[in-house]
Image (cartoon, rainbow, N blue to C red; front, side):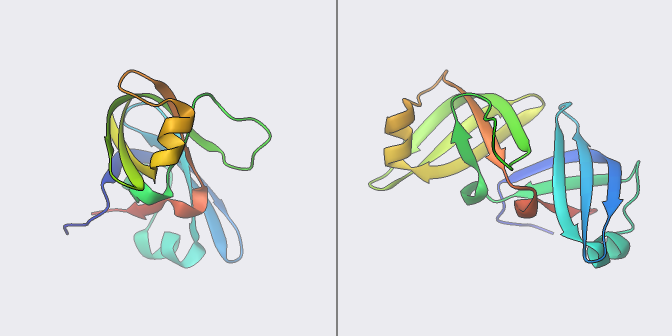
Length: 139
């Protein structure tokens, strides 16, 4: 299956915390980072997910926020450190390419945010991703 989602990270399920309607699935990405996906319990069953399952974590570029350092006092638990490799800015929006351990991700943010944060090639950043914005695929 070909998808328009740019950010696709291979990994292994390391934990499953099942709830009545929603389940938190913790994934150890091949680059060594951990990411949590909050998906429906029905999806976990349909995909046959269990610790040790191979998955891809999928995140739309528009669902990634960027910070210049780890953020505390926030409910977002997925915080992946990296370094900006390129910024492609248009009139209102910008695509920011970020190298992270084991790969690269792309975040689409406003041009104003790029300027306010001083983002440029080489800038350290932290990608912030809500667990509800992470989808899982088993190919």
